[in-house]
Image (cartoon, rainbow, N blue to C red; front, side):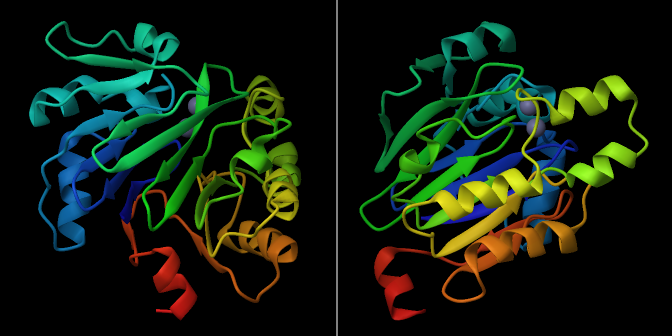
Length: 259
Ligand SMILES: [Zn+2]
Ligand SMILES: [Zn+2]
């Protein structure tokens, strides 16, 4: 399964997953024009998309869901609570899923789990016979059982939103600081590192996601995660908010061979 991060953070989130049989876009926070432009930066055109999956209703993840679905003639999948807030165009086919119950799109099995945020929100696992990719962003704290849910991941895309001290002394209004730092806000570098340290098996690859451009730095996020997972064995990457990032193909066998 090929993973391409097209945008990550409050500027807009979208992720492209390409398996042997289907292509899925997860989250629709970039305009269609921007999404096409990000793919073009990688020298790629837009592939046929079979489904759009939305994690939650915040605009940086969901604003363009109807446009994507209309452009690509595909359904939008999300939990019923999220679908209700999305107000999709009537012509768009909505496929609700229940957090905690898996569903299939082509050869990809999608697992979900509710996570704490100030809108109904899910962590997602995308599983094929060769690889499992986890996506966990927009959560205020790590709930019990999340580490276990992620234990089979070989690639983990994990929020590392802010450095708690930078947020505290930074320019945000007090109410926004409180929201970001709250148990329904966003994950700090330290909370992300604690989760990494708690994983029963460290994934072969970790990508730090949804970094704040105001209250974090790549250096701080990276060094915090490195302290949790060590330098050996795990590839650590940091997603850029406005640049696409194509991850090299992964699969259990490829990772074992170190390819
Ligand atoms: Zn977000
Ligand atoms: Zn959010």
